[in-house]
Amino acid sequence: MNVLKWYDTHQRILPWRAEKGQAPNPYYVYLSEIMLQQTTVATVTDYFERFITKWPTLEALAEASLDEVLVQWQGLGYYSRARNLHAAAKILAKLSKIPSDPKILKELPGIGDYTAAAIASIAFDYPIIPIDGNIMRVFARLFAIPYPLPFLKKEVFIYTSHMADGVYPGDFAQALMDLGAMICRPLNPKCAECPLTTKCQAYNEGKVSEFPVLKIKPEKPTRYGIAYILLCEGKILLEKRPLKGLLGGMMGVPTTPWGNEALNPEDFFKFEKNLEWYEVSKQVKHTFTHFHLHLTVKVGAIYNTNTVIFKSDGYGQKIFDGHWVTLDNLENVALPTVMKKVIKQIPDEIFKKDSKQI
Ligand code: SF4
Image (cartoon, rainbow, N blue to C red; front, side, top):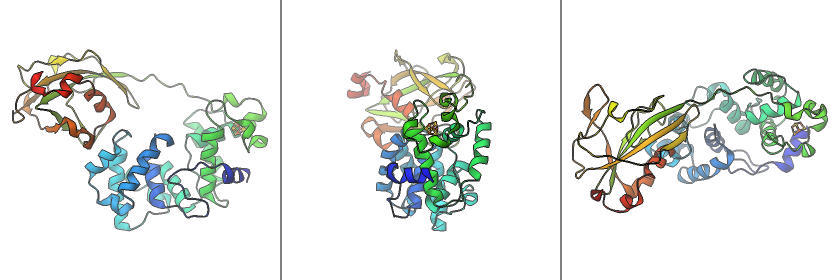
């Protein structure tokens, strides 16, 4: 067990990890694994600390409101994770425990094969190896597996299913994760420091740079939209996005739908027919998993927050259901990163002055 020996002295110190000789805290493992979906350890660490300070137990998290959770989550991205985390915490708090069986874990919102295996093995020493990108890379090189994803994952699953039954499955899984993150890195792997050199086929054949075999990625499309910043007496008009879909449940300034072509502003909604909009010269650019987004930003002002605002979607007009939020209070609002970028476009002189002066 070269890998376990190596792990004993080289493991990463992570705030959700149990210290040597201590049992893992299943809540910490669960919370960290949800946060780590699609996100790096470096980014997650601060968020994790903030969450366990505010909600030290699963029960405390279950009692929080979804809005509170979304506010703490803002900036971490993939907001469906926050909604699922909150929904699952409520279910788990009723059970008074986190299940150890990956099949049961997978029935919870937001938990797929990988997360179920990671929680089960790390928190409960369940004999299963979660297959993440790091582990796939290690195995692709170790056995010189000649396939790109998704076939690589199936092949790695076959290899790992024979290995999980050994002693300390949790440590074994974490050792492989750490080895992938610290030694068998995507670029410039540190083979000289690796405990697996004698067994590594790619290394012994001098072909490390050829594995894993990469799949050619299709180019991400670009979508376009217009974001409207409407100000009134030091407040900004925000709307809550629908719970389902991208950035669901988060707050943001109203935008046109995000389409594949640059939009003609007249084709979509406007708030008040005669309102003059100031167009910010710089577009806001943001990249989501499946597309790039370019937003044109328009800033306008009205004089009374009680003004009834209509929104037209090109087919008809309806009363716009928005929330006026004081500009100074925006840090307490669950704003996704793209919306923070948009709001940053408010010219400084407008942000500081009363918006009536636009
Ligand atoms: S020897 Fe090199 S390529 Fe092989 S597993 Fe170790 S770090 Fe990765």
